[in-house]
Amino acid sequence: MSENNDLERKLSEMLTEGEMEQGDRKAQEIREISPKYEIRIQTTLDPIVEETLRYRKIGRELDNRYDKYLDQAEKSTNLGSGSTTKGDKA
Image (cartoon, rainbow, N blue to C red):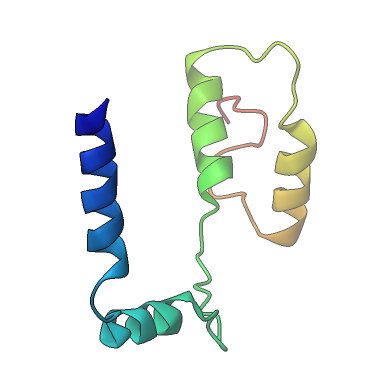
C-alpha cells in the first residue's frame, strides 16, 4: 500500500510543481476559436447523387429512400447528361 501512496505523492508533486507553459495554452486557445469565415466550394456534381446512381446500376433499392433527394437534386441542377434519376439506362 505504501508503494501506491508513494507513486500518488510523486505524481501529485510532478503535476503541481513548476510553472504552467503559457505558450502552449495560448496556441491551443487560438486553435479552439471558431473561424470568422467559412470556405465553401461549389461543385458541379453532387457526390450523393452520383454514388446513388452507381449503386442503382448494381442492384435494386428496396425502400427508395433516395428518390425524393434525387428528384430535388434534379430540379436544382441539370442532371440530364445521359443518365436518369432512377438509374435506368437511357
